Amino acid sequence: RAKRRGRNRSELFDEEMRADAMRLLDLEADLRRAIMHDAFEPHFQPIMRLQDGEQVGYEALVRWNHERRGLLMPAEFIGVGEDSSLIEQVDWLMYAHVVSSMSEYPERYVSINVSPRHFLSDNFADRLLRMLDEADQDPRRLRIEITEVALIEDAPRALRVLRDLRSQGVAALLDDFGTGFSALSYLHRFPIQGLKIDRSFVSGLDGDARTESLALVRAILAMAITLGIDTIAEGIETDRQRDILVEQGCQFGQGYLLGRPQPLQRNGHAGRRRGASMH
Ligand code: C2E
Ligand code: MG
Ligand code: MG
Ligand code: MG
Image (cartoon, rainbow, N blue to C red):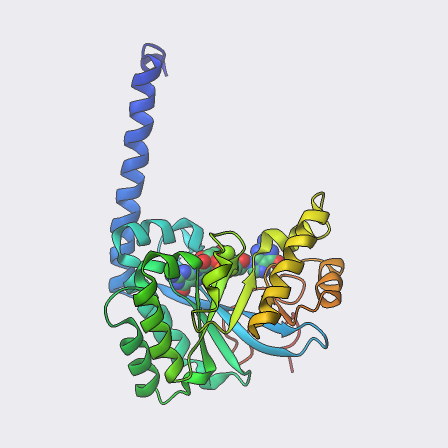
């Protein structure tokens, strides 16, 4: 303390920067170790048809079981993973868990997340299709979630990857839709089977900015209808939000109201409301 008082602002600032950099290096080293012994597990969140509450699928969300810090959420490590390209290795470990659990649940499909750089990396589609083939799983039951960045960074390549996947039955959804560039004019050029309406618009539906959120949601839904593709609302937390979405014609949704992300249960049901796995 006494020592600190003697330092000026910029010295303290340097110290903080150094501490931040050290933390990131530690995290990266931890992540490398975690990859070596596969410390990752998917949690699954149910995706429902909003009209009748029928569960149609799951989204797989990565969790890191850290030896000292417990279960870490993606926000704590995806950034470091993306900067160092370690995310690709994390993703493959995740996908292996997801694919090997595919026959344990009865629902139609499971959705996995792919970081933009990973999606555009060499052999992504081949490797994913091979993984499905080796596990004897139907590619039509797997969907990938990418963001608009992945399309915009290298459009010709993105188009090739999407076509390769699509030709074998793997559908692609645009995640966090509405937060990125939303270059609507060229969306129709990509084989995309659905838009995931970002949580910020959904939570806005019964918040202070409800007029704006409603306008955006309606625009997204209208566009999806024109393109003939699915709409999935993210982060539904209230009955009111769900009701508005149904009223506006949104087909599918997920969120804490409908089910939280959970590890796969032994009987093959994940993410259902508490009690569902008791018998
Ligand atoms: P995302 O794909 O947009 O996933 C939705 C996030 O919203 C998840 O956070 C989910 O737990 C959370 N969520 C769902 N319903 C609600 C709700 O009603 N309220 C609130 N407040 N949140 C809700 P999570 O699991 O922390 O994942 C964050 C992001 O990390 C994901 O966003 C995705 O971009 C990325 N991610 C997750 N798993 C993977 C993975 O295996 N690989 C890669 N590359 N990225 C992943
Ligand atoms: Mg997602
Ligand atoms: Mg999302
Ligand atoms: Mg998101």
